[in-house]
Image 1 (cartoon, rainbow, N blue to C red):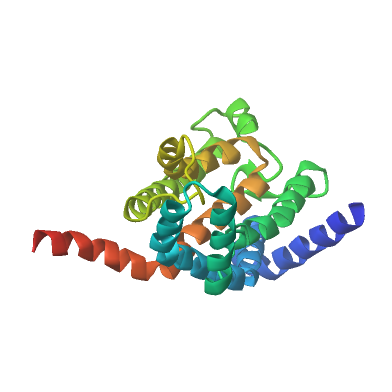
Image 2: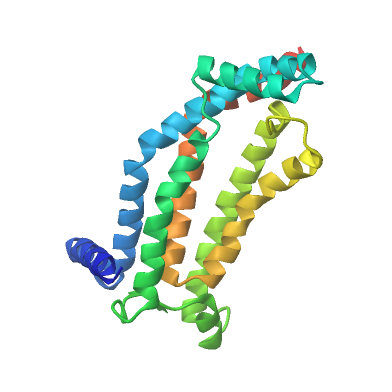
Length: 246
C-alpha cells in the first residue's frame, strides 16, 4: 500500500509542478481536479456503455412487465424468461455500477494520501488540503478564511445536487423504478433515490479537503456527463407536456 501511495503522491506532485506557473500556491489543488478529470475521462467509455444499458432497460420495460404478468405464478419461469430477454437485448443489470467501482480506488488513494503528512503545507487558498471542515470551523468559524472555501464547495455541491435531483425525479416519473420483480417499498425507494444526490454534502464535510475536491469534481462531471448522454431523453420529456397541451 505504501508503494502505491508513494507512486500516487509522486504523480500528484508532478501534475502540481506542471500547473505551478498558472496556479501558484493552489497548484496542488488544481492537480487534484485535473487528476479527477483524467480518471473520469479514462472511464468515460464505461459510462457510455452504462448509459446504453440504461436506455435498453427502459426500452424493454414493457416486455418485462408483460413477462411478470404472464409468469406471475411461476417465479422460476419468470427468472429464466427475464434472463433470456436480457441476453437477447444484450442488457447487463450490473453495467451501471462499473464506473463507480473503478472510481473507488482513486478516491481512497486521495483520502489516504492527504490524511498523512506527505502533503502537509499544500492549500486551496486559506484551507489546508489535509484538513477537514471541523478544522476550518475551529480556526475562524464558518466565515473564516478556510470556512469560506468550504462555503463555496458546499454551494457548488448543492447546485449540482439540485440539478441531479430534478433530473432523476423527472426520469423516474417518465420511467418508474424497475427492480426486476414486485418489491415491497419500491415506491418509497423511488422517492428517496433523487435525494441521494445531496449526500455529497455530508461527504465533503467529513473527508479531508483534498478528497472533497475529488468528490466535488467527480460529482460535477457525472451531472454534466449524464445530461449529455441522456440528452435525447431530456428532449422527449420536454416534448411530452407540449403534446399533452396540444
